[in-house]
Image (cartoon, rainbow, N blue to C red; front, side, top):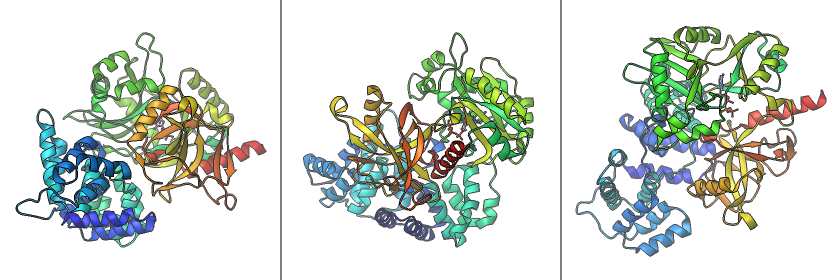
Length: 585
Ligand code: ATP
């Protein structure tokens, strides 16, 4: 398969913002892709070489890619830089530069998808002395064979900026349409994806074996499972009413969620975003190796930073010290953690996910040797009394937790789903607006005065799961320290785009648009109707969306959340309704 086929499809995708058209283009692309190449085409289309949990990334710096373009083009460095500056996109600069090639290979050949993939893969895997020069040679060689349009997408892929705006759901729709004849089967594909976290694999299986193949997906030790998530409600009474039975109420700890896979070959730890974070938690590896009786299991828990001297729980931010390439050993010593386990998904060849929670918790209890400092089961009561649960909530808060997670004792483990089998309850829900919201930065306005040189305020959006879009909901400019503004400015620099992203909906104008990637935690006083924002547009009143009143940044950038994990339009409408109920009562 020629790489130009891929580049042409990308070109068409880039020129549409309609999800249906995107799905159609993708599904047509899949139909003409040979089976053996399908997984690679899926990964490349996501701008990757492998699923995230493999931890192999292309990630070449712009400066470096620019060198390769310079070597292949007749344009001068200044001219290429000028192109780059004008378009804000190195891919477009490469397109222009490759119209004026400096050299043509002796024997010209067309780039193939396989050839490109293999080259990118060897580049991603090379490290150490001489790796830089090696990568540059391989990049230059690829570009010397590339047509300008191919160069555009090659460079974007290499620098991690493919930005086709395709979310997992759209890919699943397209696969469903291509191999099962209709997007209606997306949910079936989603189940396989939730268990494997690997869209390339799901694609290959559905293409080869159809629905029958999808049914064979099972949880596997060593492969992350997409985490089950919680809905939210305002009070214990509401939670009990919703579940209608005795429930488990557990501390909701403010740490980092870990999915721990124990196997004889070595232990692996995955984050909420399914990255392999084993190297960041050597202490957790040690403690789990000794603390679990079984040699093959998958458990989940929350790692919380603790004070070295007093053992007191520390806030979530302290764990961020571990999120670095170097100095992890020091961070582990300075900021030790305790892991509070709350679920068990797999044990010695048995998949436990379909079992009721009560049984999973009992199995977990029997398997864990608690270590008072470093490994515990999360605190839990089983109750059907609102009063008792509210008291437990108070206790949880004074012990440093965020609140409670109320769990349906009959509930199975629903990978990747946010449903009322788990309900979070926080102290703030009783007051004003309630919980914090995790919103995606989609645009910004330049700062003035003291904030000149940074952004003064940010346009934030919620995720619409059905439309797969990011809908604007508020503009926030308060709650930021100078340090936070400056570091946000830097992290947003790499995802600046020339115009509104195709998956972003907003009626508001801003100075700068971004790819929807960065997630910020925000509080507000209430949700109001608004003619300016597009979140839940027309759902309550024609022409009106929802907005957040008095929004304020709470100081947390949610590195552990992908934009699709942000607060959804569905959650916003639930919050709005419970706010109305509260006012009426
Ligand atoms: P938040 O933004 O409120 O921290 P979230 O959006 O990250 O929540 P939710 O699904 O809303 O995720 O809440 C579940 C999260 O709460 C889990 O991902 C986990 O990290 C954390 N957690 C803490 N304690 C527990 C517990 N006992 N059971 C389940 N999850 C827990």
